[in-house]
Length: 133
Image (tube, rainbow, N blue to C red; front, side, top):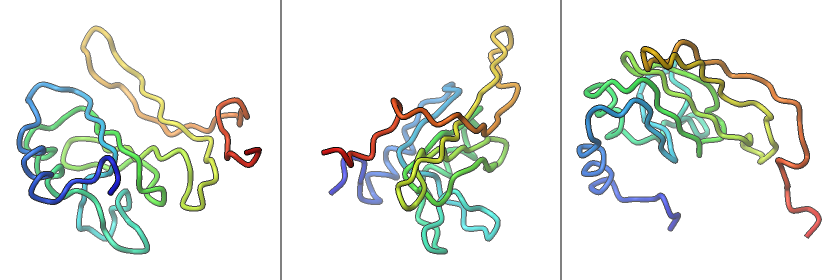
């Protein structure tokens, strides 16, 4: 199947072995939270994220978790004390959003000061829908 697809038993093993002390985590797909207010992993109204990563987020409390894949679930949410940002570049119809995540980082404390979803000016050099092929 897809390069990042793993069966649940492999996802559990991978999530259980995330090392301590890493500030920012990146995943292809979002963690799952079975809550009506959480939208980062919703596809047609169903939660499809990785529940095993969610357990590790509660346990290890990274400063930031970044994911994509679920195009409908764009935005920033919290899981415990950790912000989770789904930054899928395109929407569910594969149209570019031209929005990105801005991270304000404090080098002295090695902490994130602020996270913002910002609009970018569309630049055709950064996006191709392959319509010219």
